Length: 404
Image (cartoon, rainbow, N blue to C red):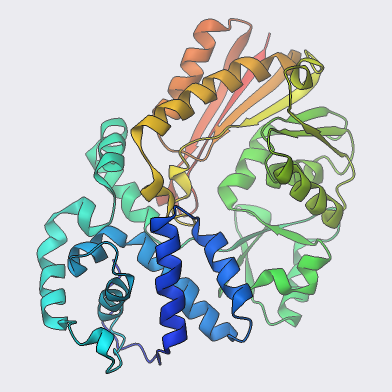
């Protein structure tokens, strides 16, 4: 739902409109990711103030999130100026008397907005192919509940880096930089921003006192229950958000091997680990089978946060839903099973394997574990849990297996 009843007192400038329209063209015509597009746009327009950047970023993400509704109302999929004008009508933002807006019929747009309410997937902007898969796997009622939740804006969640500070001290330091936060009741080492802000420019971030990490992602690390003296492998580490959280929980003791197939992600992890003061992390590129085989039956804990559809994190990555297709989805599930089979051998007898995704679909989660256990009788299921977006944060699945 993007309709705003109260008039929005915003003055529109053409450079900002050009920025929004050009960003949308890159996202939808060239399959780029919103965050990368905006990052480049802001680097090219350093003269824009924080208010302008906020307006552009929020507009782009909101339009991407509600794209099929807006294109339905605009009756075009590639006139991004006109699509943006429809968005402004729904946000009750006054349009300037420019030639580009002379064909905008506000009354007609609002009338059709009401008419299309009965079409759930169009009104809430979910592509037919994605909605079909989700309805089949979750059921209509659960899918519609989660679909509505995933169209809301994600909270900015900070994980306090306990290797360098504590929650109370970090709150004070951020407040001194005019950033207000509140503690999360269920996690003493988590803060939520009261108002969105660029936390990356703060001294606290540069000193490595926190990382941005959703509460659901943090719960996966807590679910692992790593201990300070253990040998832990984060086998699909990416840029290392969970590796850093593991290091903090292990108090910089023991040993963490962070592995991935992408060197650029591991390079980013190395920078983040240095900033965070996480010195028990070792980085390994998976460039050949031996990179995995060398750790056969050696790890106390192996975390497999596998590639997935990403449907649990649409709040913060709304463009993911427009990139979804069944063929890629099926290939991703094949890759998940392959990773489970290939990487599970690193768990030593008596050790723990944790499989996780940022998806809420059973075919990527419970069904993958069921298939794996049918072929691997050396593992037993201990616990599994799904966090849904309707609970307030991102959606995740986590499962704990014990090796006999």
